[in-house]
Amino acid sequence: MKQIDEEKLETDLAYRFGFLTEFIGITGADLEAIHGAAGAVAPLVPGLVDAVYDQLFSYDCTKRHFVPRQHGYEGEVPESIESLTLDHEMIEFRKQHLGRYLEALVTKPYDEKMVQYLDLVGKIHTPKAGSKDLNVPLVQMNALMGFVSSALVSTILGLNLDRETEVKTLVAFNKLLWVQNDLITRHYQA
Image 1 (cartoon, rainbow, N blue to C red):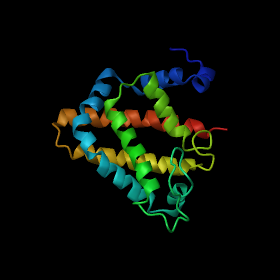
Image 2: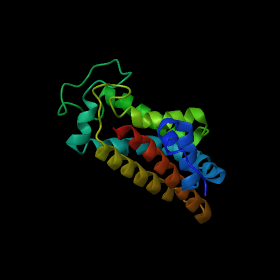
Image 3: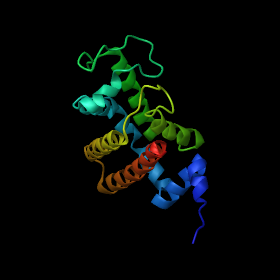
C-alpha cells in the first residue's frame, strides 16, 4: 500500500497533482490523446466558448458575476445585469480567457507551469485571486464544469474519429476534467 502524506496534499500543489493523476490513472497515453485532439478541437473553441457564455447568461445567478470589473480588464464596466450583453467589451475579454484555457488544455505540456495554471483557474473564481468582488459559489462552478464537460464530450463525438481514438480521447478528457474540478474545489475549503 502506498503511503500518502495527507497534510502535504493540502499544501503542495505538485504533490497533490501527482496523487490525483496517479490515483485517477492519467497516463502518457491519455495526454497524447488530449494533445492528439488539438488539431480538431482547437478550431471549434470559439463555438465552445459561445455555448458556455450562452449558458452562463441564461441564469441570473451566473450572469451576475460578469457585472463587476474583471481582473485585467481596463474598459467600460456594465451598469447592471440587465444592461450586460454577450457582445459587451468585457465579455469579449472574458471569452478570450476561456478560449485560451480550452486551447491550453489541448496544446500545452502538463508540466509545473500548466499545473499552476489549472490551479489558478479555480482560485480566480474566488476572492483569493483576481478581483476581490468575484466570488462564484461552488455550486455554480460545479454546474459550469458539468456543462463544459458535456460540451467537450459532444464536440469529441462530433469529430468522427475512429472508435478507438474517440474512446481514448473521451476517457482522457474525463480524467483531466476531474483533476481540474479538484483544483477548483480546493479553493472553496475554509
